[in-house]
Image (cartoon, rainbow, N blue to C red):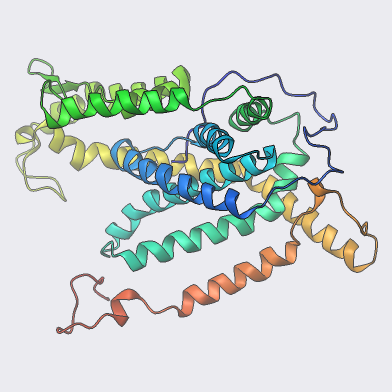
Length: 377
C-alpha cells in the first residue's frame, strides 16, 4: 500500500489543456537547490520517515508528510533568515521523498521475511538505496507525462494543497505553532496511556454469542492524526475493512471451521480452539495481503499506457536532440534530465545489484549453514 494523501480542501483545478502559469515565472531563476534546503529536507525527512515507518508497521499504511514539512520549513527558514519559495519546495520534496523511501522499505520487508532472510542493517540499507535510485530514474520520463501533459486532468490534491501552503508562507501567513502544539498534546496523551497506564490502550469486548468475534478500539494520537489527514472517505474504507475482517470473516471462519477435527495446513491448533487474534494471524492476514496485491496489480495494469507513453515521449525528445531540433536554451520548468540517464542508470543499477555480494556470503560463519540465510534448494 502506498502513502495516503492528505484530505485538504484545494482550489478547483484549471480546465483540461489550459496552459499552466507557475507562481514563479519560468523565465526567473531564484535560489532553489541550495545546501541549506537539502540539509533541512534530509533532517525533516529522517524525522518524518522514522514516524512513517512506525506507522506503517503498526497500521499498514503511511501518510504524506508534505504539508507539515512545508510548514516547518517555512518557519525554520523564517527564523534563520529570508528564503525563497523554491527552497521551501525543495525541503518538502526531499522530506516527502524520504517518506516514500521509508514506505517502500516497510512494504518490502514482509517479502524479505517470507524468503527467510534476517533484517540486518546492510540488507535494509541496500534495499532503500536501490529503491530510491530506481524511483528517481523512473520519474525522469514520468514527470512530463503525469504532471505537465495531465495538468487540468489530474487534480493532485496533496500537491495542490502543499503549493497553496508554500504560497501562503511566501506571503507571511504560515506558522508552525499548531504543529508543535499538536506534538505536545500527543506526547502527553501517549505518555499517560502507555507509560502511566491511566487507561486501557486497546479497550475491547469479546462477543461470545457471535462466534467469539472481538471488537476493539485503539484511540491513539497517531491514528487520530492519520484519520484527520486522510479524511472521512479513505478512513471509512479502512473502518469497513476492519468490520469485514472482525465481524464477518473471522466469525465465518470460526463457524465453518469448528467442525474440523484436525488443524488446517500451516496451523497447529484447531480453529474452534483459536482466539480471535490467532484466527486473524492464521487466515485474515493472508486475505488482506491478497487483496492488496490484487489492487497493486490492477493499478499497475491501468497505468501501463501512461508509462509507455512517457517513455515514448522521452525517446522522441532524445532523437530530436540528436537531430539538432531541440531548443538550445530551455526554460527553468522544462529543464528535464535526459531519458538516456533513465536507461543507462537502470542498467548500471541492475548490474551493481546482480554482482553485489549478499550480506550472508560476506559474513563469516562458523557453521556451513547460517540460520540467517535462506536454505538453498
